[in-house]
Length: 167
Length: 100
Image (cartoon, rainbow over all chains, first blue to last red; front, side, top):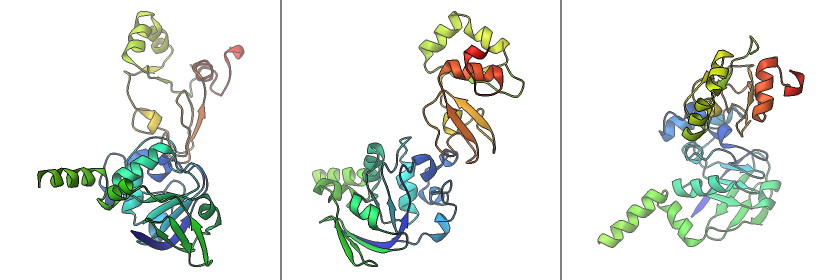
C-alpha cells in the first residue's frame, strides 16, 4: 500500500480538540466532520487540502481527548497519511481502528517542509521526499495493522475475519 | 460570589455528589449563587451548560486547556485546583483563599 501527496505541516502537540472541535461531535458523519477538520488552528486547511495530501507534524500528535472523530475527520478530508515525530497513544490506535494510515518518523517529520511532495510505502516504511530528493525510513506497520487499514478499519477487518470463518 | 462570575459545580461521581449533599455543601454553593449539576460531561469539552463565548475566561478544575476546548476558540481556560477556583469565583479574578 502506498500514498503520495503534498505535505501540510503542523507543529508539536496537535490535540484532538483542534483536529475536530467538540462542538461538532454531535455527528459522526465523516463528510460533515471533514468540513471542520483543523479549523481552530488552521482555518484554511479545509479549502486547501487535496485528496492524497499528507499531514506532517511534530511530537505528540493527537494528544488529548480520545475521540475517533479526530482520525475520521482527517481521513474524510482527503489526507492519505499522517507522518509525525510521535503520536499520542490513544490517537495512534484510533487511527488504525478507523483505517487512517499513520507513521512515526522523526527524521521525515522534521525535514519535510510544507508543500513538499512526499510518497510513502507502508510495506517497507520508506518515505520519499520527491521535492527535496531525500529518503527517510519510518517504522512500517506490523502485518496485522496493515490488514486493519486495508480493511478500512477494525470493523471492516473483523467483518472480513468473521466472513472467512463462515466460508 | 463575584457579580461577574458564573460558577458551575459538577461533582465527579454519584458518590461525591451524595457526600456533598449530606455535608450540606450544596446549600452553601447554591446560596452563594452557584449552579450545581449532577455528575456529567458538560462545559469541560464545550458540550453544554456554561460553554465559553468569545473572549470569556474560565478557571476550570478540569485537566485540559486546549484552544477551543470549552467553547469559542478565542476563549481562555486557566486550570486550577478547587481552592483556587473557589477563591477566584469570589474575587472575580484568579486569586487564592489567602486573599479572602
